[in-house]
Length: 332
Ligand SMILES: [Zn+2]
Image (cartoon, rainbow, N blue to C red):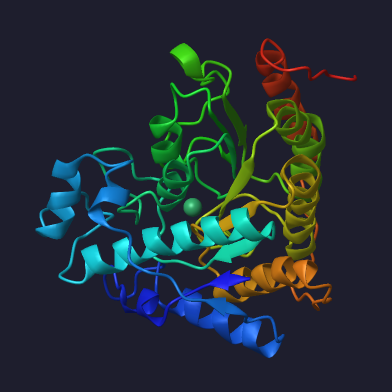
């Protein structure tokens, strides 16, 4: 199932900006071509629902079109469309939870760089965090965008009821997501950062899934799983240096889907974050939704380039830090 609304394409940051309406346009086109476009319409999130995550003063700065960040300019339509993106995530969450079926919320603007009282990195409201808070169950968030979801990590940093795991490229925007960031207070041990250097791809991600993500999520035993899905870790992406191929991306998401089936009865919600090569982004999303409906997709972008020695070293470093909290081991 897909959650989508045509108004998501009315959001334009600035002319020529990579986070453009073209992204969803191409995804919708591709899903229609593959006969995978089964849509559930969203409703706008109320201020009350948004305020379960964001401070009311921050919500009002967006409503009143005040400045928040150079990379998140506020226009007259921003508040309404960002509220519809948050609402779409709530719609997707409720559908997935009630029907025990995976849902993909194809929303814009994205959300994972937005914290309680700040925006940035093309993000205004944190859609995933709003979905999590409105469901209010024990939740695991797996963030596979190229960038660290600093907003989501911040929001749940002291919360033991929400596990946040992020794979991302090291040492790029927003600069957070170091291995040593493990959570604080009650939340200590519930924040897992896997920062891959440039060049890491399919096998490195597969190792991170098998050695860290799968066992940690299993042990945490959530009632619901969210995926902050960014397509910008693809080797075709113009912003990033990671090198997942389309089959590598889809295989990772298939494994996450199977994990959700075993751990929480397929209560699984994917939410769109970044991804700026529209051809690669749309074929990966078609592959993921195709897997849910048993439909095979033909891929154009299949090159496997992986700096696996480096990737493996990072996975080992993460295990050495996280084994204080979880039953995970380095086998070598
Ligand atoms: Zn990103």
